[in-house]
Amino acid sequence: CKIDYQAPADLLDGRVILVSGAGDGIGRAAALTYARHGATVILLGRTIAKLEAVYDEIEALGGPQPAIFPLNFEGATLKDYQDMAETLHREFGRLDGILHNAGLLGRITPFEQYNPQLWEQVMQVNINGPIWMTQALLSLLKASNDASVIFTTSGVGHKGRAFWGAYSVSKFATEGFVQVLADELENLTSVRVNSLNPGATRTQMRKTAFPGEDPDTLRKPDDIMATYLWLMGPDSRGHTGERFDAQPPRQ
Ligand code: NDP
Image (tube, rainbow, N blue to C red):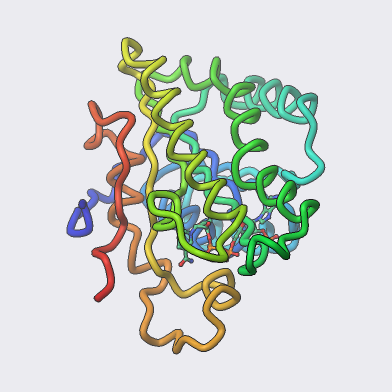
């Protein structure tokens, strides 16, 4: 647990970092935080207006000029990921980090009633899309001398819970894929792959999952950024195939 990590202001200077789901919630906070620490951030997401708002905020705080990459994991094809890799290769020549943060909750409902189409959508957005995007971007990650790939997991990606259906299964898959890829890249010390569980955080997704909960009892995305910084920056070198929590478990 690195929740007390104090990041130097220049932690991510000169690094090019892709953040998915950068327009809202935890991804928005991470994009702004990474930019504030010197990173050139590629803002990936499906709602362009939200990405533009984050872009403007980064400009206003004087961070390095970000880039916007509109992409919807639900409809994205392998060609889209290849095109993305070509564009990023042309613009930056390498990638020093990916925060896989975009996520879809689906429905909290008994499995007997789970809609198969929705199940497929959740798997597409939470795991299949990110996996094929990662495959397309691997050569760019290998071109970096210190790349960190972070996949976002959840408490239900570790221990199954009734009614959490595809979301829980997609997060188990996420943690499994992190172990597989980290093991494959074990001898390539310049690329590490880990999973990070943000823990209960005050966002729209959390509100949808727990409508009766008082949001004031939850940490805000900005409050959980220490581990996001540590894992993206050079101080986490040597850690790969591991799972981290961004906040202590709730009572
Ligand atoms: P939000 O719902 O607030 O944000 C999710 C982000 O993902 C949004 O920017 C959204 O874009 C984007 N997104 C959703 N679907 C797609 C898609 N098809 N293509 C591209 N982008 C998409 O969620 P959180 O910030 O709470 O969650 C962030 C991550 O943290 C997720 O992976 C989630 O599973 C995980 N998590 C969150 C917890 C919490 O308590 N909040 C706890 C444990 C894990 P748009 O804004 O356009 O909809």
